[in-house]
Length: 203
Image 1 (tube, rainbow, N blue to C red):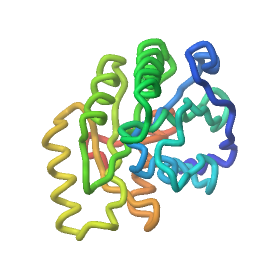
Image 2 (image 1 turned 90 degrees about the horizontal axis):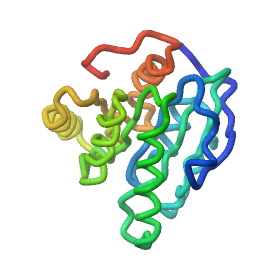
Image 3 (image 1 turned 60 degrees about the vertical axis):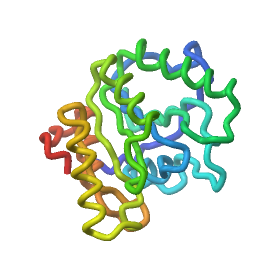
Image 4 (image 1 turned 180 degrees about the vertical axis):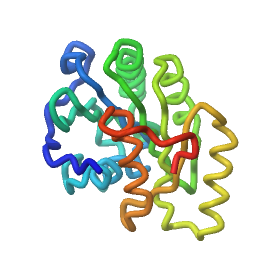
């Protein structure tokens, strides 16, 4: 199992010309601003504080690149869906995502992070559409699963899997409790090509 001991922040980009060279393999993480995306990245990579978390949702407005080893990267995409973000920022987000998904040939997979209590918003569906256009596989993390009863969490996962069908795999996740961290790491390893990708069950 890959522990990513070499994980490090590389750079941030506010436009396509600032993206790192399009080489090797890269896996993106996207999600609503309050879904726990940064916490999920830190838990999966096993590096506390690598991706910055904030008490104020919506702080991630750039594409943040993290190196995991030679020609292997993770990108933390700008958070979306936060009501207090100005319209100009929303438009910039759309342009940035369009540029990223249409031109990033090294993109090998996408994690969409969503709150298990409020899964599959219009923004989540938009991300699925972008990924489908780019032809990259998608794995859904239903975060904060610890805040639901076991039955409610299982029902949420089943509902999401039914809705997305073959467009994505999905699993329950909790950065706080460590639920699903190993399963998510296996998916990441598979996308990066350092281990076989799990089957359609998705953990």
